[in-house]
Length: 416
Ligand SMILES: *Cc1c(COP(=O)(O)O)cnc(C)c1O
Ligand SMILES: [Zn+2]
Image (cartoon, rainbow, N blue to C red; front, side, top):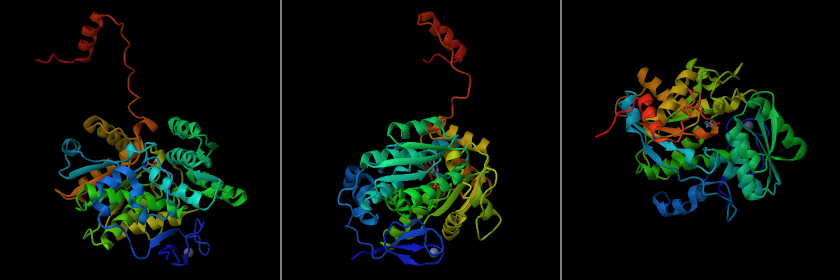
């Protein structure tokens, strides 16, 4: 008996697990809802299964029925305690990083795309299409290559080169648009309609992909021995990452494995903050953002034409007792740099928004001393580098005298 269904978040109509991207009745986002949760006993304590299968260890809770989903071993990322970061920033909280930079394509997008691409295979599709600010393009290209499908990725023209290099290498066709991510979405919808391509865009346009993000919660439960953190801080564009993680914790609660849920924080950039702005203003609905202007390209989604996706995320933030807030580009860059300098975790610029949000929440008295806080490190620094903007290093001749001169110039002291 099939126990899963697609349920419209806005009008509550229910559908089978079909190819729908949005609710055919009202256009609202669809959510995969599980009936009875049936999982092997001890699934959530099974390190061995997680090591061998990555996130697919949790297939009973994912909407894919293929007996052998194609995979590159995605999931199973480390949860890292970062006490130096907390103390240097003057944050008396227990700070952790869930390090999604350690995925096959260097971003958390591998979780949603792995599910969506396998769903495409299940539906018998040959071509998948996505709109993306770069990371989803890479993951779509890579997982499509792995599964033997063709990929079309539609990206803003100013997408960082390393993100496109990865997609290109995997053989994806790249369509560069003179516009933002919402402009790309319109191309994808047209491509899906006119050519029958399967839309795997990781907004809520693909309800299955969202489910992949639940596995972050499952892994965290095991890694934290079923202690639920007080706060989970997520860099947010449209919000499926945040919503998926929260859904995962709800599954754990339904299974009786945890007693409470974490409070979810949506971190956005001031130059594109439709969800944070609606939260600040106490609005019920999220409005599209005019005039995107931020360095944090991976979370710069103005939501034009799918504003209800932002409202869905806003509602989940509120339901969890969480917060949505915006931080400026200076704080985002600074925070990304601090993660590298103080802990050696090299994240892409956009990811800095999570740490900047924690600092702001502490300053505003939202977080209390002693609380636990997990940052989601969403993307790898090499995919949108920072740290290459200072003075270039001097080049020296390979003779021994150069060493002394260089050491002196660096101001390095002799040890012992
Ligand atoms: C996609 C992305 C996000 C935002 O995720 P959403 O689920 O779209 O809100 C955050 N950080 C990075 C690096 C991303 O690639
Ligand atoms: Zn509906």
